Length: 239
Length: 103
Image (cartoon, chains in turn orange, brown):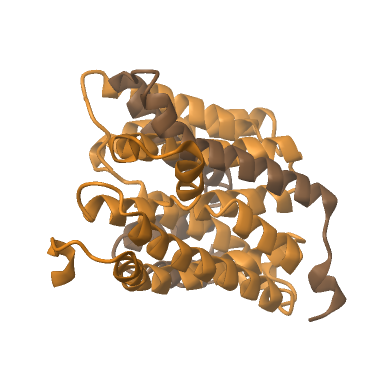
């Protein structure tokens, strides 16, 4: 879009509107995704209010899928929180790249803005150029937030109407969704060794203690260790 | 809206609040941390690889539990980066239903 290269200082209102416009293609992708999450959450026993609170307060798609799947299996609450934390650790790296743009911004203002930092908001804001235009940031962030909240709650309301999911192969939905999310984290061949290490560790631990959440931690640690070994010498975060 | 729609499970609320706090800390932690700690390339790479590793660990036992599911999972991996997610998921579900009958 030609507006991406606009250098004339725009008013906050124009910046906000531009953020909303730039968020629309992302919304188109996020709404079916949110609807699917909501319908799976209904099957895991979450009410629309539960789902609304989760989307409204956590606001992080991949980790919410993980949380709903684990919750449906009866995993302990603390383990679910731990899994959410692990999936969202990448935010640390994304946020670190924003540090130069947040210099001089007060802590409450930065803390509020960063609540809206999802992969997409972050990527669009970086593309927007120097400095962090707060109005643009909120234009993208609030649009995605409302779309996410609305679509996940709508999905939960609709999901409660569908009867037995396993009969339709819908128990495979989670596997398919996680594989699609995984594809989004593919960074070329170098992603393969950590993933294979994670699979091996997870399968081993899962065989020893089926049903427990420990295979997830084992996979995360094994994958992280292999990536750390690979990463010696590389310098920057390349999303 | 039915009364059930507004049902609130307190154990769910506890997980949501814990998950919300943990997630917000990962969001504000980046700029805070970078000003204080210099992350080496190895730590950087480990953090970057964590979400993928978590997803692999989550999916591996279920995806490899039976040949039909493993084949359908492989199919989803092949198309995941080429088609929209809703399509990839639908193809995977249809494939698993057929494969479970065949295998």
